[in-house]
Image: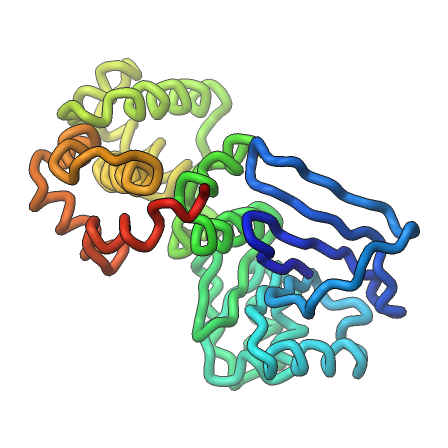
Amino acid sequence: MFEHVGTYYWIETVRDAEGEILSRGLCGAPGETTTVTEVPPPLPPQPPTDKLAFTGGGDWMLPFGIAAVREAYERGARIAAICSGAFVLAEAGLLDGRRATTHWMHANELAQKYPAVQVDASVLYLEDRGVHTSAGTSAAIDLCLDLVRRDRGAAVANALARRIVAPPHRAGGQAQYVTALVADDEGSRLSEIAGWARERLATRIRVRDLARRAHVSERTLIRWFEASFGYTPGAWLARERLRLAQELLETTELSIDRIAADCGFGSTAGLRAAFTRHVHTSPTEYRKAWAGANT
């Protein structure tokens, strides 16, 4: 369970059956103090959590667990399920009529047991009217980073991703798994290429430029990107440019024109179009919403 408290998250780890708290503490953004206290000793009472995350099944499927889920939802808490934790939410009726995902190995069982749930096993994570669900362990990290991004903005979420050595942002709509795997040496070269491109987002980068640097054909490069990132090189570059623009809008006073140029959008109109398409707001409104939020 975790609650957004100012610039921190108050986190409690709860034992399933007895509801006993195993640990609790404040977790701050990267660079801020993080304290996790084993219990005991007791800490001062905290207000009810405004976010709950559930891992797979277990004793949460018992009546007390289902009642706790319903009570939290009814008072407006944001609910998230990790992997087979979706079964808990489905048993509580929270997923009826909603889209939800889980690990692809459990998707058929979830759909058969709870036919009122619109199960989508093709995505990493998703949100439907305030209820969040995710696939397996790595997708759960993606979901949690997305929650931080919603609360604190892209700059903090990106810094947190760097701290835990995770990709800065994998969109929820990305596929859970791919049929073609990238070999270790190919993955190493792809990582180098991605880093090289991120350092040059202000410039024009073509697929042929990336392929030439990797010493492979364009077709092979596209296969590598789709296998590792779930996107073509062009789509990946567009998302990286958008991510950088969000961070600059949050953390700098650069003009919109300058940010558009520094991120490689070519024009302010191109930046606005990208924000409208993917963020559903304008760069100016995005800056108003997030500027100063992390100070």
